[in-house]
Amino acid sequence: MKTLGRFYLFAILAFLYTPIIVMMAMGFNESPLYQLPFSFSTRWYVALMGNTGLLTAGLNSIIIAVITAVVATSLGTVASVALSRHTFRGRSLLQLLLLPPIAIPWLITGTAMLIFFYWSGIGRGMHALIIGHVALAIPYVVIVVGTGFKTIRADLEEAAMSLGSTPVHAFYSVTLPLLFPSILGAALFAFAVSLDQFVISYFLATPGYTTLPVQIYSAIRKGFTPEINAISTILLLGSMAAILIFARFAKPGENRDPR
Amino acid sequence: MAKLTAQEPPLAAAVSSSQSRRLPPWVTTGALLLPTYGWLTIAVFIPLLAMFAFSFLTATPLGNKPIVFTLKQYRAFIDQPYLVGVGLSSLLIGFWTTFVCAVLGFFAALALARATIGKTKETLLVLILLPFWTNGLVRIFSWTMVLREGGFLDYILHLVAPQAGSIGFLYTRPAIVVGLVHGYLPYMILTCYIALSTIDDAIIEAAVSLGARWWVVLYKILLPMAAPGLISGAVLTFVPVIGSFMEPRILGGRVGVTMGTVIEDQFTQAFNWPLGASLSFTLLAVVLAIFATFSGVLKRGSVA
Image (cartoon, rainbow over the protein chains, first blue to last red):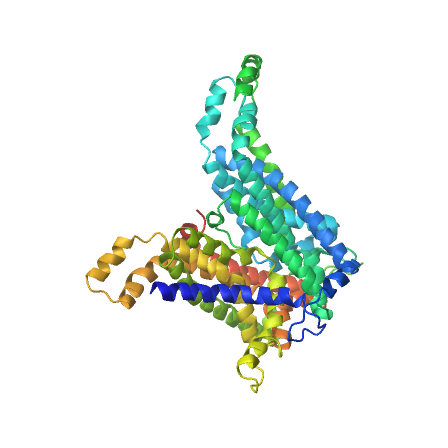
């Protein structure tokens, strides 16, 4: 029974990784029409270096992900202090209100943002993308930092205050250093959420300002070369690295949220 | 800590003076929460309300066109009968994806919980969850490399049987389901695994020592105990799947017409935003109904 179980898990892993590995391998295949058998070549990576459209979109993606990580982590951490340490009426309602950005299909949120941003004059483009990405990342930050709060004893802060520390000072000198791994984890998480976001970006991007996934999508629909595989490989390895580093700060099994 | 002690005397003095004029607690709580909830209000809550309002307009208000309210967008399913078929096709893709995910995911979680230990278990869990956090679009694109005619699947087949035809099935409904299962299986494995890992070995040993066969153990103990994980996994697979548009577009080609792609078209091709808004809102109503039905299970199963 145990052997069967392990064999089955191996099959599941093969199912999960085969397409990804095939896609990555095709980026190193000579044929522009993805023809097999495989013959090794780095020509698509060389070509990618001259593809300003994809490179600009990639740079935009990274800039937006960094801004999203900084803004969402700051706002989310501050909110998490109130949600984790203060008791007040309506707290569970506020916690419930964190769910819509995660749980409602992005198609719905994305089209709603498009309508409102267009209607209110906010418009589309970089600032609209940042507003959208930060909103999607905040709930994850609050959850990750909130999990961190659960591991820190509130009485440490109280002890500091009873020894004469102000609440703000006690927070900065006692709680914040203990919370730091969670905050860093949350920032990496927000970075990954933004970097991988496609649906919202798709509705808020303009022809002049796109992100990498949006650019890849239009390439897939309008014809492409294995340069797409090359940049996709870089993107996948990048977000896998971010998540593996995140997993070192907070155990992935404990953050049970969809998407 | 040493630094803290050194600063104590002047701070203690400051505290006694500031304590008298400390702000009421609701002000600090409010100030801490305002940035986050203000942001979510502008980026998510008001847009959803705006979309609701938009769904009652006759046409996209461009330029000086007068704004006229109507209910006709919600009659779309009657006026344009093809939408009924599209809706059914979305539901069908949703059911198949959820079903395949549930079957594959339950047994994977079972194998993970009972056939592996310690470091191996942790590594396997990370390996299973890792693809989940990578770009969904790129993963769907990967499947076109495998499923297309003359793709990786055919290549493997022709290594075994050189004379065989093509078994590539890109641009079919099963291709869409395969891509979606690939996307949501890790989540189903995680929710089932969390439910199964709480099962006490002694219960199973007791059942076996009393003569229960393996299918009795499976049916009477493992399945009922994994039920909360299965249900939350199913809800959290079904909901995003019925709102998907990029997966059917890329893997389904011409047959990949779903509610998601119809809504996408209203916003990017047809510029009929009110119709797009009413379809989006109908979808949202379905999603909320599903969440409301299973809220009890979800609360226990997914929000720790």
